[in-house]
Amino acid sequence: MARRAHPKGRIVVQNRKARHDYFIAESLEAGIALIGAEVKSLRAGQASLVEAYAGPKDGELFLINAYIPEYQAANKLAAHETRRSRKLLLRRREVNRLIGAVNREGMTLIPLSIYFNERGIAKVELGLARGKRKVDKRAAEKERDWRREKARLLRTKG
Image (cartoon, rainbow, N blue to C red):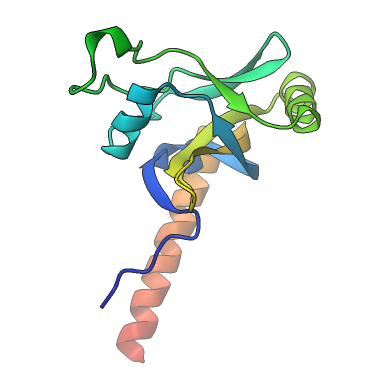
């Protein structure tokens, strides 16, 4: 049986902790400016979004602190910094709206995943998020445990 393709294409890396630590109000897709060796590393499935975020700099949005390791087979001249800031490619209106939300409403831009779309172009799924407190995290965990227990009870009593 053939595996079904993911609707967003081939996912390289996901930030699983983001949904635990933040309330995601909205998610959107953005392009990312990469150099050749970074694309090769992503195609090899090597990246990490732990502690990464997106932030404004000079009226543009950048992905900050995302880890993309050096591609081993690349020429040493083509080597890149592993945690450099990478420009996010969005329309001007979206950039202004997101910068406004971050500055005014105290929201955060969190990268949820990096993936290749159907055309083979690297994309970042960004989430406009608000941080959770410990109480919120406990409540979400309690709700998840209750749903799991309820499903288990319904399955056994059938």
